[in-house]
Image (tube, each protein chain N blue to C red):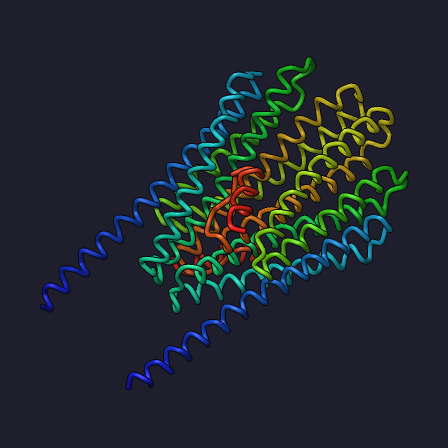
Length: 241
Length: 241
């Protein structure tokens, strides 16, 4: 009888582990889709490819549906399995991460819409270098954050938070340049504003990648490092190595 | 023995109810603080009151700390009490709502920073009417969303989502006006951009108020209405009346 119960609870916990791995995989799959959305939105903007922009926007429904489905799976696990400790932190980490991923997808869809508008407008490609450069950095941040999540790697998560500081600096300098350009050539205002919105969406997407990194630190170490500042996040992560 | 157990579990569940009410109250208290931040940020902008702007920014740390504390209480309840059904939905609703409240607080802090910049700049008060008007609507949305949460009122939550449509329309028309103004008077670009950022922050804050309203519908009805569109949200809410 005792052995039976042991086997039974072993089975339950194995089944539970499979369920946890499944929602984690679904989250990473959603992350892959969002990464692709972001990369394609940037390509659409730089190459004035309206068709690609429209594809990115069409993907948004799929990303939204994934968020709802994963969220529901997480709620079901919370209700049925009543996870504790690190299992609970994993489920809560996934619930928060998919929210940030969905918002990155929203920003990608906005960039795609701007790409379609810019493709219609004549004018210089002023600001494209900055969009491409910051866009690459942010795309890499999203990739690193998902990787850190997949590997429960708090140090890699810390690297994402550090990169966000660089993105914010570059964003600030690109914005100042765009504003100067508008003042020098007021006829460019409408077009440059579209570049400004794209830069802003990228900066936001970077913030969300940083949020995901913070969820990873919480998941791995059980410490909430949001709002704590980079140096205290670093201290926290290093203290456990 | 049976009676004892009954009394005991009654006590546990009563204690549990008290805990749930407490985190709900804390969330509403945090909401009140965020509402005040938003109202003060708008006043600071309209009246060029740098001192008030600086106070709003100082409040941000307090709001952030409240978010972390409430989040921790929610996680503790999930781990210890293992809530199910409507209790679980309440805890998850609170976890999501405080995230949106924190972001509304962020937007209020941004508006406060813009207020401080605008107070330093000479120039017309072009756009102030729009900021004040949209700001009032958004502040009211936040208030209604918190009220709907407090009273588990899905119909009131639906009204918040409807109001967001109006805010988005007014935002679009105010933005077009600001862009026209920049083109007509390029010397105003720097100043008008600050108004544009403030309008954008308000529009975002309205989105977050709508998110809170969607959490209320989920909490009350167990249906996730995010991404579903207003008409399907309305159908859902009306079907249960």
